[in-house]
Amino acid sequence: MPTDGVEKATEQATQILELLWRHALPAKPGARGPKPGLTVDAVVDAGIALADREGIEKLTIRAVAAELGLRAMSLYTYVPSKDALLVLMVDAVAADDPAIPADLPIRDRMIAIATRIRTELIAHPWLLEVSPWRQVLGPARMRRYENQLRAISDAGLTDLAMDRAIAVLTDFATGNARLAVAAAGATAQLSDADWWQVHGPLLAEVMPAADFPLAGRVGTAVGEHYQAPADPDGAFAYGVATLVDGILADAGD
Image (cartoon, rainbow, N blue to C red; front, side):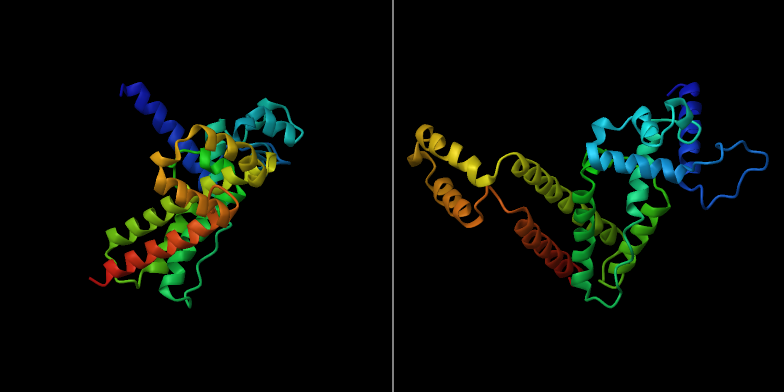
């Protein structure tokens, strides 16, 4: 990367990190801060409320400013860009995740890691649209990672295995949350029973049943049991229990 590109990236990273850790850092002597009457926290809260209500595609500096009764240019006093605001929003949401009770059995503590991630994503579906790669770590996400590690620190895993266990549980919870969010959005428009009433007979007409004997038999059983194409909640309960049992079995080797 050219020198000017590195300098620009460093400047942007410094600005975002200082915003993320604003409550932990001492105020700079003589620094010019935002105008009184509004805080960065209030801007972040407004961004979260907007994204929860209308989705991330509607999240703009102008829209958040309108939420607060301000002009768009005024908001740049508090956050330098939409990307920076998103980083702050992701960290702020993580602050709602308290420590996992230490008196729970280790298996329940590990399941809680995945359950809390899934619950957060379902409550804030826009998080699924934020790239998880190279996310800048703020105090809330670091605290959650610390709490997750503490929750499994007595499982007999190495440091690398603890990190990998948290990553695997998070990835599974994220994938299942994506399915649950999609299911909720679909049923809001047309119930699963109505959808299948339309598509079932049409599929039966075009699909040669003899070519798919197992898929036809299992698919019919699933549809009759769930009255839906799938069961995100049941799949999560089964999957996370299976994952945790596998992780704990590996820890005992």
